[in-house]
Image 1 (cartoon, one colour):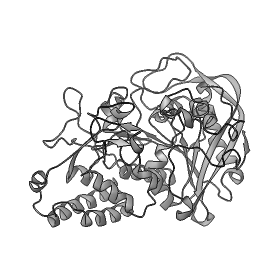
Image 2 (image 1 turned 30 degrees about the horizontal axis):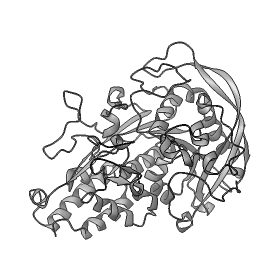
Image 3 (image 1 turned 90 degrees about the vertical axis):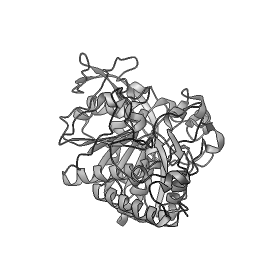
Image 4 (image 1 turned 120 degrees about the vertical axis):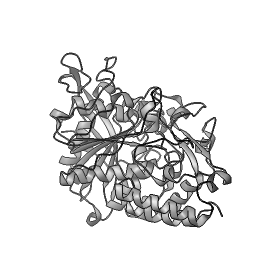
Length: 461
């Protein structure tokens, strides 16, 4: 069992973790940082790894490590719902980032879940990945605060992730205050989802730490089990686990270069669900700015809705600028529903309904209607009563722009071709929203905010 130290203080006096957000105290939450240390084990494959994900691995070498975790939890223990989500922090930008917290924190907070973000990979601690965020790698951003951290390399990341989950179970008094976990769920987006895919197939069957997995925006192939290891293409999720896996895909994830999850599609089972969401991108305007300040009050919902008609082409004050306006779609709302669906699945044992897949054309691209919107998949009013053509592909520009999708606002004439007045638009949009609540695509509290937003919008006024 790893050792837990903290809450951590010192250095420049603040936790280093991606973009800043709103004051958690305003919603009854608090944040603390801890160090976790121990000896981590690498894993080696017992023979070739098959595409079906039914892998057998053996323990390899061991190495000492000290990493950090960030804990966000209800301040009042009575508001804790018993669920802890452990996010594998994303290091694609050369720093630790928490995209799943950003996308889903509104749902976590209103349900009273705790969240733990773990620096499972070396880049987040010492840098060496993408130069874009190198200054915010922990030891670069605050050498004094993070002097004790030591990561032996990503071959050990899988066991570090297991040990973090084990610490949540075994040391709740240290990590969670007075909260006692009843469920510990794994979650990770993008490159973290690649690693979770490999974790589920290779490590989860014997580690037995997590009660369920939300694999968010993975590609067709999992991350390497060890540095340089060849992984099967495609890599499916094994179906013999005794805990559920929910795989969430945007349009980008299905067909974009370097992702291509459509190659790894697999049928739903009693332990696997695949969700595919049209009108969404791997990352979008909510995830890249709007969501940072979303306190659940509805203000961010209004900002995101308005962005469909006036979408940004740059994020973070121009740190990244793309060739055309980026996606402003419903990704956050459906991911919140996925978070809730997984939690309920683990609580009750009843799987959520199977959802339709996004339709693909004969050439493997996404099939679209005359307005440029994807066919099939989990439907929302953003794509069924659209004010813009939302896509997960077609973006140009530097850095990560290819992951950000596009938004092309409709002209007044285009809008009037479907509904001639604002009131007719509101009626159609609200009916579609109600349908999305019924299917489980959108949660009722989000729908309540969105009804107000659309009624107060300027569409066709």
